[in-house]
Amino acid sequence: MSTSTVQPAVGQASEPNPPSTPAANVGGARPIRSLIGLAGVVVTCLVAGNLFLILGGETALGEIPKLLQAVIAIVAGLGGSMALFFFVNMAAEGLARRWEERVKPYVFLLPAYGLIGLFIVYPTIVTINNSFANEDTTAFVGFDNYTEILGDPSFRETLFNNLLWIIIVPTFAVAIGLLIAVMADRLKPRGEKIAKSIIFMPMAISFVGASTIWGFVYDTDFRGGEQIGLLSAITTKLGFEPQRWLSLQTFSLNDLLLIVIMVWLQAGFAMVLLSAAIKGVPEETLEAARIDGAGEVAIFFRVIVPQIWPTVIVVFTTVLILVMKVFDIVNVITNGRDGTEVIANRFYNLLFESGENGQAAAVVVILMLAVVPVMIYQVRQFRREEAAR
Image 1 (cartoon, rainbow, N blue to C red):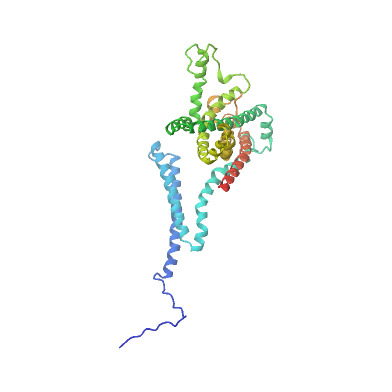
Image 2: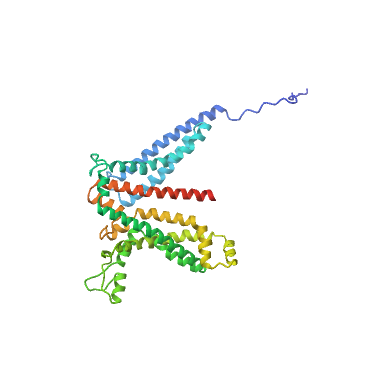
């Protein structure tokens, strides 16, 4: 007996085969995955939080050794972060498809936004609030802290010192970095690497370490012994009397001696970025300028500098923001003595030595108001560069 199959009529669509996996099973698995992810987030936060609490106190076995504290901090920090993002991703994948696509970006951004709010936004709000309070932040005093600070002649001298740092350090750091970048690029590859490594080496030194080094450079022995300070050794060998270099009465010379340290530290940073920008200048434009009879100086100022100008601005503003917050150099070498006070060091002294919490907060707010416009300009400059690419 023959069997016949019924063929669908022409133009009549056949029904698709049903999926091999029942929809009910797939739909049921997603909520379970989401619940597991949420439970993992809670457990991770509790475990990491308890580990950090252990670091803050003693255990039943006594004080935790420093090495073990470092290991626990690494495990709780890195491991906790990895576990947190793993379970958060699991919880997001357990949602319906359309909700997963909407929620997932914010799930990964929220921890970063939370940290920004915890460590930047919240302290900023508290500092602004404290700037209107008294010395122990127990009562509001309005603008008294600002009027007292701005009316103090020593604070106006501090502002002038910061202005000197702002004008001199970025200008000389960029100029020296640019000069070294141009000169190093003319060396052979091996010589270029050695020269740039030596110039960049101070960047590997901390501000405190650099201040200590230069403290020996400015050191003077008035007891008649051998001078170990570089400047004093040179001047005494030339027949001059030893000088107390960081206590000179000459106008702002003490500031200039400290500014030299910052320029020494930042010239290598400027050199690296500007050298990369110079190497990106098209060789065709340089050859065209040489064919037109332009000299090397004219090529540098009329061809190279205009093409690397955006990088020059970025380096200048980056160093400028760093200089506005300068603290370590002044605090280590002079602690603001002999007319070398700067805003950040004054804040430190007001807060930790004088106990003037309100005035210290007001000084920070003034510094923040000075830094914010420069940061806004730098962000806009970055956006212009990105748009031009």
